[in-house]
Length: 559
View 1 (spheres, rainbow, N blue to C red):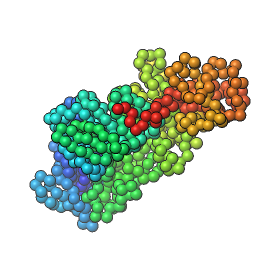
View 2 (view 1 turned 30 degrees about the horizontal axis):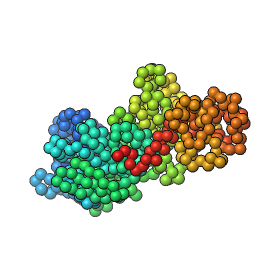
View 3 (view 1 turned 45 degrees about the horizontal axis):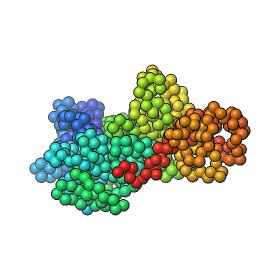
View 4 (view 1 turned 60 degrees about the vertical axis):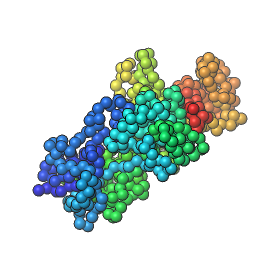
């Protein structure tokens, strides 16, 4: 008989550990303890089942105890909750939730994969029957049943992260009027404000109210509706409320075990995914990982890393000595027709850690502009003064997924922004341009690092002293009828060579066009004409206008 391995929790981390372990060791005795009714389900698909995109509930059930037994000879005990770990005795205490029986099980190796639990703040009225969180099959069943039995017309989603925005889309698609309440001043805190502003603008096109920078103070219920009182004093009404403000490690059961926790409250593991007890491993949403960029501790609850960690933990249990090399937080979300992707660190994180960095914004088409239905894609690349890629954020309608994956792979293999220019990426007019958006982001960043271009950001315009700075708009006069930066001077690009003497040489010049290309060309002309202090507005007027529109209409975008 081989080792006896007990695994606490299924889903991504626990189930992948068990399956890999069996493939590596046919003789191991493997038992999974799962508090819920299901060993492995597609929690990322839950919003789409509520909205009807996924029509059959059974499609969410990735694995069953019966299949785990027949395929892998794994003993799966659902509705069995591990309530205590006796490390000195190498035993766990388990409660059978069906019978109420409490029993113990010994182990040679223990794997902890308890996952995370939704954060549910202590707010008056939050336990009402029409207020839900969404994390597991029980949650999704309760929401589906409530919608089918009560036909709610108005919904409020508290929290604008990935799950929150996916729920907004799916409730909207069910015909509900949906409002978003978010305590931060933006949606999707994994991206920077300027990129989130694109999402804000898109949501307004759907007539979805955004209550940003505002939190819930209390819920007041009448027979047929809930009145939500916000911290600002504003009030709104809803028939159903989804709480989606985040998750935290579900680790109450290890409280008295002596297993060390990290600085952020997750289970501390080493690079081999061992806890402070060498016979206990931990994987998934409950652990602290190493941020791949900063090398600091982080809690990053994502399914992809959890699956990889399960595989690596299994390898190490059988003696392979495989290291987990950190998590970079690559994520993507569908928000109606819009896609948001990110990888690595955003500027907010880098600034908080005092890490010097640069960033540039490029706006290019998803494929060749002459081929029908090309759509804009905004790419924000963040990098060190030496060219190391710290992060990337992309917002667009088509092709975001493949571009963010290219940058994510480049980060993982320690490539620099210069390497992005050399990537030979698939091109045909329906799919890309000869210079792919990833190439273009690399070209622009390389120009900055090589001294070919200095950039200004949207906030530099906001802070500019017009007595010391000239904002030069090089678009055509007809374009200004659609909007321009207040106080800017208009000299179209085609007239710069004849009119550059109209510009003062003793002031800073920030050049703007629609997306940045013409401004870059104008900057090269002016610098060769002897102008010293010239910068290009990265992302152009289009990006600036989107950000300022969002800033100037907070906290309510639409009402």
